[in-house]
Length: 236
Image (cartoon, rainbow, N blue to C red; front, side):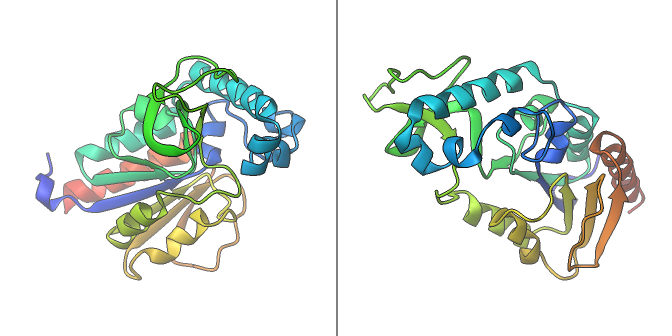
């Protein structure tokens, strides 16, 4: 086993692509849950103020999908990296698949679908195993809302995420178009000399050519990349 102090620091930035391979649809999927909704009416802070019932119905449906989904080979491979590296996952996903696969250090940029909070603060979070209804309140009497960062809201975890990226020695980007900001800008925070890997099934054009591209589905390419990195750690 690699001595803890000698482990290289890896930051993994994951997007909807890795969860899509567990059956959770992305914004762009045809036939998925998102296709039946106008995003401006269910995923913005204005939508919550205008029609909270519709917003809750949408996220209740998403929560049921997440509960039914299972981690895939990509999630499990990332968890296996922790034996050889100091791994932090920064995810744009609101599911708990990384946790269920065994990863221990995860920053959720956009919130967590399986948690609720009061409308006035995200200081106190409450585990959820079912739907949120309009009449539900937190223990201190606030209206309950999903613990989700909606369009139009600040991303509270960005500063923490930037600190982690600045200190990493290896950056891995998985299943994200690198078009959604501010999360897409995190790649610019890493040191110029760090190793960079990109895993995606599509053809992503990025302005940083230092990425080594593992083209293909996360369920196939992430285990290959992890095997490559573990081999490097064993031989170092």
